[in-house]
Image 1: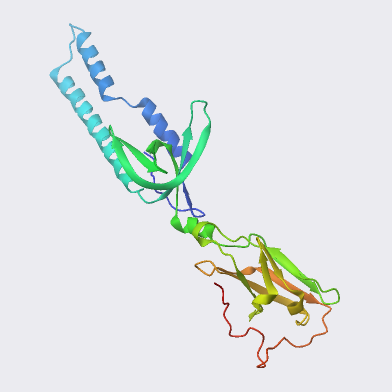
Image 2: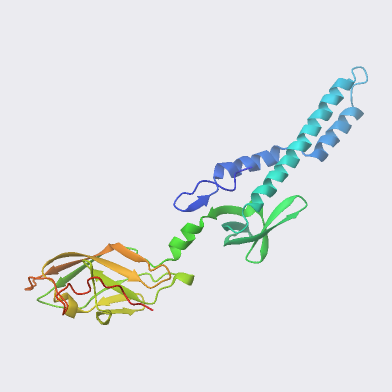
Length: 266
């Protein structure tokens, strides 16, 4: 039987198709206990009276039957053990309805039910055969996907001769890790929160603060107020052109504005 837990690739554990195909081939070619008994009875009934089977042959066949039964029991035990190891894990199942339509079901395995030697996984309040298991997803992958982020690189450009507010879009996260505020740090300097606005998933930096920067390219960090204070430092850059400013903006104490400050986000 294909392994239920495999190495993680890009955070998700996919079941190999070749394992599933091998399983189906084995199932279609396997000799069940009932079929074996029927063949044995038929063989005894129609054996050649002039050349009957010997006791040794029957014993060998009986040993084969016993071995087959033990292998089937072992396979059932392995399936149950693997199913129990999935409790608490996030899985994806593929189900097929009477019209042949395939539906993907995702959720955590609450418990495992063994009925007639077959394992069933409880997902989203319903029992599903373990044969419907498609993939097992690492918790780290689930968390990473739900955190706030910036999907694509953003190159902001500010022309001091034609000053305008600059905006870009962010992903505020999902579920328990959704953010509703952001802080902006330009070249290590935390901007005044009054100069940064968040509307929906759009962040806007007021031109008033950008006019204080000399020409150059600056790294921009975006800090979200989700429970993990997710910080994105490699997606946004800022280029200032046509500026007459020659020195970095400073606060009333003579320090770079925002230096040694931390964002106050509730």
